[in-house]
Length: 242
Image 1: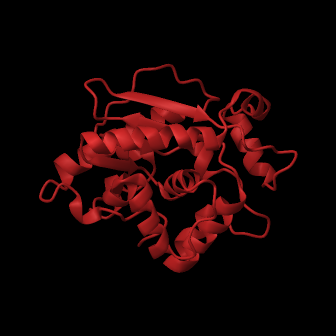
Image 2 (image 1 turned 90 degrees about the horizontal axis):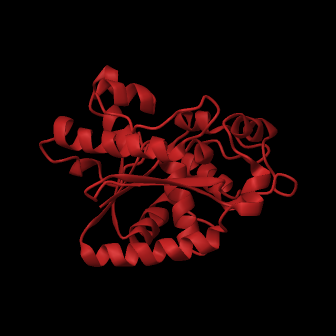
């Protein structure tokens, strides 16, 4: 079973005032990258999560809108909120009809418990630092992330209950120039088919993105990193490792 996520609504969810943008993370040493991620995730509610299950006869994808964030109350970067609105996020509807992160975490924990009983669970993402951090935070009851990256990695293994991969990190380290870049470019280079669905210009379509990320991970493992199936990349997350 593969569960995947790479939502725009996570990676641009709002930063604390006075903290550098996520794009600046690559210029920082790993401990400072994690400290920046922790500062944002600890303080800021997540807007949406997306998942794809690649372990079924028919691949399925979900996008879950969460109700925790309130722009009138929570600290945020106005340009980030404006960007998400331009991509179709309706914050008023999210508060009124979205799912509370605590309720989602309880359901997810039950699903993970069942999945672990059926076999090994694999998590994959494309640029997944914030995705994994928010999932771990929710599964930990909303508590702040651990103080160091090593403590976070241990907590993630315990709560997620499976192997963790980042397809973006896998692609960039294989030393092929055509596999460096964003999700669409890498998917095109690997000839990864996209999920058939309408694609309005102003829509996040996070579930569709997670579906592509899941297929990129599978293509990397089977066609590019076939010698070990990508095992040497386990636990290495783009944005937190070189």
